[in-house]
Image (cartoon, rainbow, N blue to C red; front, side, top):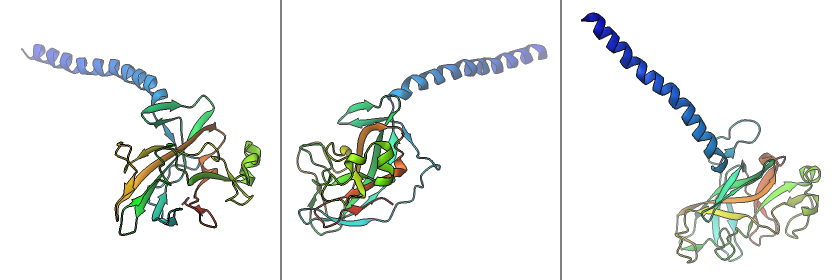
Length: 220
């Protein structure tokens, strides 16, 4: 009976191995089909971004509300999800994406309309900015100094189109004004594009202009 038990054992071991070998090709094929439709984020040159939270920056909007804002480094993505619609970049293009944490440091509810305008779907007082040194060879020199709030050496590449609010953890989708309670925080993801893939995320900074004499650089 020993030879029979050995044969059965070998058969039982061989079946899972054969199935695993077949399954590998099926999984790889499925991933390849899904990849173009996934919101894929790419790390900028120099390796992965540290997960450490950058120090917050205090800003005030045009209505006098004060917030502490921490902006993550700008990233590149092949697709963004805006209002439940998936937008994919064409070959050779990408979207620029940033996620910021906004905290209400006051003792009362504060509106987030400068970060998330429900009427337009844009973050009206936030901009993606590039230096003139990088803007000229990439074709963005016409954006330098076009926004009167910024000096000539800063090129607001998102001026005109604006930054789209992809998600806002404080927005409950009831079309009411987005309010942030005392001590509460919201995570807001913004995107711009598509732009040429030659625009490296490390070239782009995030600025806030809420009516202060000089816009505030939020980039860590």
